[in-house]
Figure 1 (tube, rainbow, N blue to C red):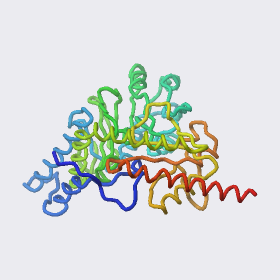
Figure 2 (cartoon, one colour):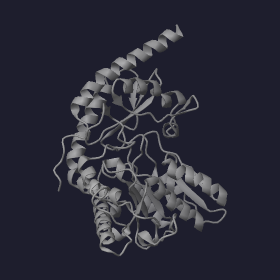
Figure 3 (tube, rainbow, N blue to C red):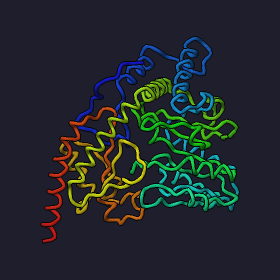
Figure 4 (tube, helix red, strand yellow):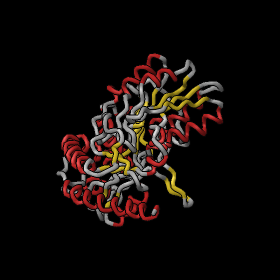
Length: 394
C-alpha cells in the first residue's frame, strides 16, 4: 500500500468534489510509468502487450474488490455516462412499442436524457418517479410504476446534488419480484460510502474513477452474472465482447489504484468528511434564511446542498470563487439565462429557492482550517449580496 499524502495541491480551496476530484499524487505516479517508460496494447500477443494486459487485469481486480464483485463481471468504459448509456440503449433495443422504462425523477442526465430521446424514438413510455421532499425516492412509488412490460428501472445510489442516499436495495427487491432489471448509477457513491453489489441487488452498477481521486476517462459497468448486454461500442472483441475499444492503460492503472486506496482509507476519509460537514452545517445554522436540503435523509458524508434566501446562488458562487473558494450551483448558465436545478425542482421547491442554492462537497484533500476560513467569508459575501438586493428594491 502506498503511503497516504497530506494533501493534493490545488490552487485556492476546492469544495466542488462532486463534480470531479483532484488526482491523488500516488495515482498520478502510477499512471506516469504507463505514459512514459511502458508501452503496449493490451490486446497484443507480444510481451509488451501482455504486460499491458496484466496491468489492466490487475486494475480490474481492484475495482471489483472495492465493490465486492468478481473481476470478470466488470466492463471498463470511458465514463459513467457511457456505461449508463450502454444499459439504457440495450434495454431499448429489446423493447417494443408500448413497453415502459421507469426512472427516478432526478437521475443523472446520462440516464434521463438518453431514456427520453431513445424511448420516444422506440415508442416506449418513460415514467419518472418523483423524489419526496426529503430528497429520497419512495420504493412504493417505484413499485406502482412497474407495469408488466417494464424493460428497465433506474435508481441512483446517491444523488449528485443533494448527496441523499437512495433505497436501492428495497427497490431492487421489488424489481426482482417482477422480473424488471435495475440499473444503479453509483458514480457519486463509490469511494464515499461502502458499496457492495451483493447487498444492493441491482443488475447493473456504474462507477467512475474521477469522483474519488482517480483519473478522468476511466469508469466501469458491473453486470450481474447471467445478465446479457449488447455492446454500445462495436468493432473489437475487448472486454469479453461487451465494449469495443483499445484499453486506456494509464487511466485504468490509475483507476485500479484509486480503488485500492479508497478501500484502505475509506473509514478515515468518512470520519474527516463528517467532521467537516458538521462544522460547515453548524456554521450555516448561524446564518439567516439558510436551509440545508435533504438533511433529514441518509446522506453522503461529504456533501451539503443549501438554499441561501435573498440571493442568486450563481452570484454567490462567483463571489466565493473570486475570493478563492470553489463551490457549485445546480444551475446551468447559458445564453445569458440561468435555469434552476432540475433536481431541486423535482423536490417540489420553488424556482426562486432552487436558484438560491449552492452545493459544497469535500474531498480527501480538504481540511478543517479551510472550512473555518470559508464560513466567515460566506457570511460576508451573503450579507453583501443581500445588501445589494435591498438597495435595488429601495
